[in-house]
Picture 1 (cartoon, rainbow, N blue to C red):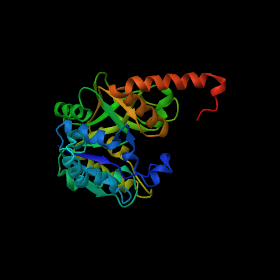
Picture 2: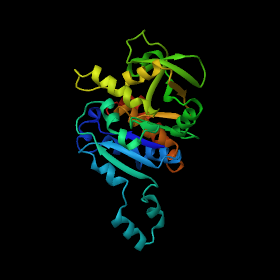
Picture 3: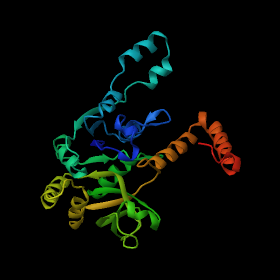
Picture 4: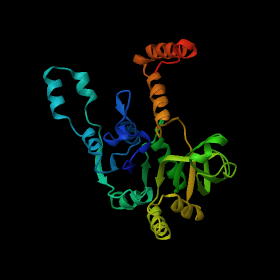
Length: 294
């Protein structure tokens, strides 16, 4: 099975930094966000991975390449731990530029030759999930059971639903059939509290559904995959998986900041000092004299 990472977007919420540095390359401590997703795929048995990128993001391609100068320097100085850290991941990384920002539906249409009429996993860099079993592996196992396109879903509180695509589900349990999906429903109108987010396993049926969707949306400047998912769901070919693991939302600056803090607390070399610093900052914040701390 192959993997696709959709990473061509502008990331306008992170301007001005994202003007020159791809958001996918922002570090979570000492690893860029996209590295977590590639590692997830590799740990799931996926070794052919396509990055759908854009002309401003060549640094992503460079990151997964061999760093000749550093490798030579660390070899000569016998700094083997550093050499190990910069060793390229064991995967075949391909890149494809999305020349026009016409939405996720357009980006997915571009990958059809790459996946070669086989099921494939799609990841959006806005979300990483860490846990005992990689999320991509969970999706693959669900597809092996159902033969369906599989959406990863999470149950959220009512006040959060309007930010996401919310599924209309059939049944209960870890794996549920999807009737349809409603994109960013108005408050009080969501069909459930289960939201779909940035990890999918698509069957090749997706591409015909996308083509039909593209024709119906031809008057728009961009289109998403939602209508294609709904078309497949009419044929009862879409399942939703309540995944195992902790999701980190990197889609906005606050989510990125809190995710970095949570991931830092999982690193034993940082945990103690980071907790001490957080307690110090909280104490300063609670002290009126510290209200001007930036």
